[in-house]
Image (cartoon, rainbow, N blue to C red):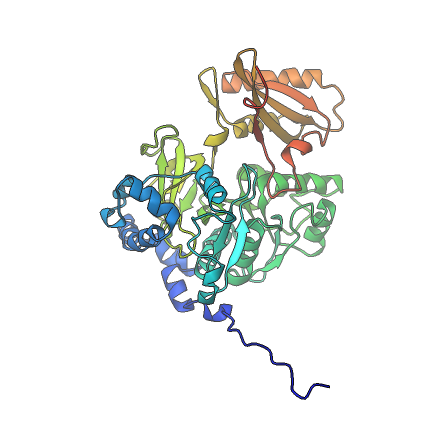
Length: 474
């Protein structure tokens, strides 16, 4: 036996509970319900003043990060040149391809992060990625401040949806390197007082078991992507349940798709919200159901022309460009998301808020295809084919060159009881031509036939589009 005990080197731990000024956090970014008594009801002039007060710090931090500094230096603009919200337009936008290029040129995490593992003594870090449905997943480090503000922003959306302390809320987001499931859990647990039921997607907890948990445990809230929530409703029917009557659900927080369709199917309140990996929730639907309110205490939101990048008037469809005012880790300044939407109104909402409202996301500019002069989004194609009762709900679009011109093809799953495909194919093609004004080719397949393309259940959200124009000869 050794004469002296083993000496364990002492290394300081950046304990999470010491990493934040919690009082400052909730003062700057009020969580629910206080947010809805304060900032939510603030005048447009006061909101603008708050944004312009927070903008200089966000820009200074971004300029300290090589990704931004080299881009801004290239156009001769310094943060001190930005004095108003309109001045932001002097700075160049960037897109997801720029982030991926940054990772390729500066592996493995790119030069856009703002924090690295070497900064951990300032506070513990989290590392997540995007979902990867539109390309290789994008890594991002999150500081404690960014993580908690992001969770507060998402929790606000959950409060609007109707989640309350003590509610069991089933989180169907896929647990993986993807950020989505974890930030939902943190928002529910840290900032809503809810009890997360972390079933994840069907790859982790089989859909039938998810339905059983919904019923047996009296789950009151449900979170997920529209497509998976519709799939759960269909699974419930297969098990002999009526989704609108046989469950204890009071509220659903959904991402993407058609919230009113989910309300009809599940028989409870559904509130849509919009966000993404880089910034968390940007906008959320209120009980008035007249669009999604923008969280303008945390963001500057622009709508720009899809081709020129010029600012668009309210009501015009364009790409959302985001600047996050709260980030201390990886900054986000003039990120051209390529998500298309429009400003619906800046008037005071029936709920009492002056925060502007945006539409649901109409599609991604990256997946928009121009056919014979008409802009077509895969999401619009999917919405039309899903209305046919003979269709199972799953679809996948691709575009390719045929005989010298671009053609879009939609692959549609028929329901199991539908044996004859030719009539369905003809009817869907006619519906698409009538409603979109251009021919879309239709291929009908049996149930499950689109899964190899959508990867439904194995990724956080299904893929709906592939551009094959550059992968096969004309």
